Amino acid sequence: MKAAYIDHPGTPEQIHYGDLPMPVIGKQDVMVKVIAVTVNGVDTYIRSGQFQTDMPLPFIIGRDMTGEVVDVGEEVSRFHIGDLVWTNNQGYDGRQGSFARLAKRSSNANNCLY
Image 1: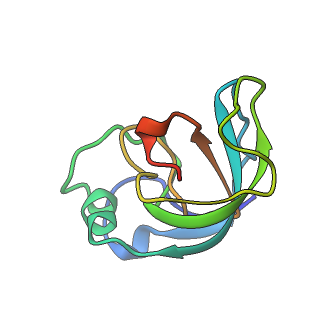
Image 2: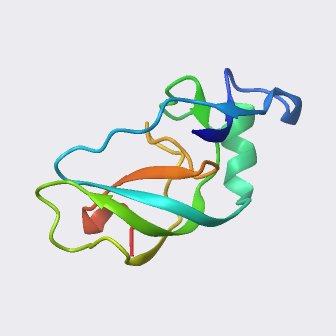
């Protein structure tokens, strides 16, 4: 899967674009085909390491996105394949970011997927 990612926090020159493994959804997750993203000011703090957060490496950058649900976990009832969604809470607290072709997201309402 194509994604913009970093191998470690640093300058914008640390951003790579290339292939990473496809995300795998769990029972309460939703897989979203990313349609559009935007650069949030917080993205620069996370990417640079100025804002400390759990960051699995390689780390897909980006917080904001809109997209279309393409798969749902077996316990998901709120979202359905084909739903259009947005979130501004990717790429933070151990979650991979939005600058990829696909993004995995919890279907839990407290996690900002609408």
